[in-house]
Structures are given as structure tokens and as C-alpha cells.
Length: 166
Image (cartoon, rainbow, N blue to C red; front, side, top):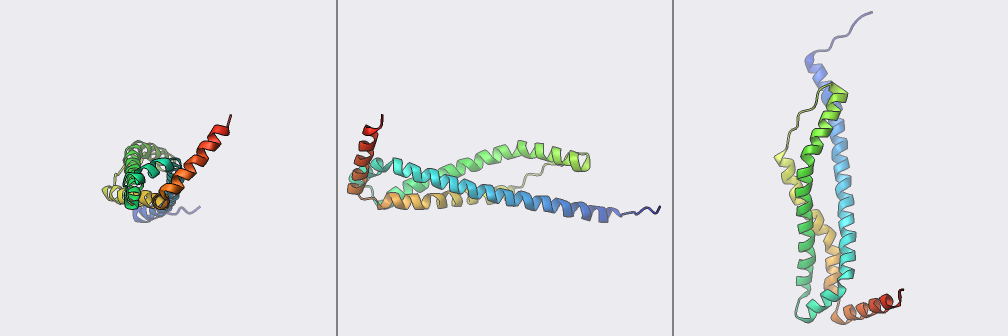
């Protein structure tokens, strides 16, 4: 039986190839999770705008412009996006340590070292802001297009329905 030998460079290249596949899968998963987060935030913001129709009507009645309403909704969404970025950055460290230890023990019998990328943190901050602003764009436009009469008529319909429910 003939034994095959690999140089350290060949072994390193083989291991790197497998790790790159894992990294690509994790990046794709992160992008998918970001997309789901943006869609969830858009749905929550849309619901919030509908629930706050009366508030927006009162604001318009006392002089708020459509631009002001857009800025309020987008500002809230951007704040949520920044808050989620901070929370994600804080949770990423312990979770990355656990995943690195698990994968390292399974594949190499030693934990993988943790490397924090300031570049990645810097890229995700504006991505979170842009995604949350994008999620709030349609609901913000809806809020800004409501006339005072439409908003109050909508609220009166809501009050009639809530008075009928047991």
C-alpha cells in the first residue's frame, strides 16, 4: 500500500477551500436574515402607521407638513436599525466564540480563533440604516399622503367597529 503525502501548502489550500465555502454560506445566510428583517420591519412600520392614523391627522391639523411625517416615520425606523446593529454587534461576539469552538472542535480538534472585523462592523452599520430607511419608505409615504379628513373618517370607522366588538 502506497501512502500519499501532502505538503503543508497543499493541505492549507484544501482546508482554505472548505472554509471559503462555509464563509460564503454564512454570508448568504446573513443576507437572507437581513432581508427577512427588513420585510418584518416594513410590516411592523406599516401596522404602526395604520394604528397611528389619528395621531398623524392631529399633527397635520396643528401644522405638520407631509415632509415632517415622513421624517418622523423614517427617523423611528433608522433608530430601530441602529439599535439592532448595536445589539447584533454585542451578541455576535459570544455567538461567534461558541460557533468557532464548535466548528473548530468538529473539523480540526481545536477551537477557531475569533477575529473581529472593524470593516465588517463598519459596512453593516450603514447597511442597517439603509435597510431600515427602505423598510419605512412606503409606510412613511402613506402617512404623508393622508388628508386630515381621510384620517379622521378612517378613525371614525375604526371607532364604530371597536364599539361593536364584544
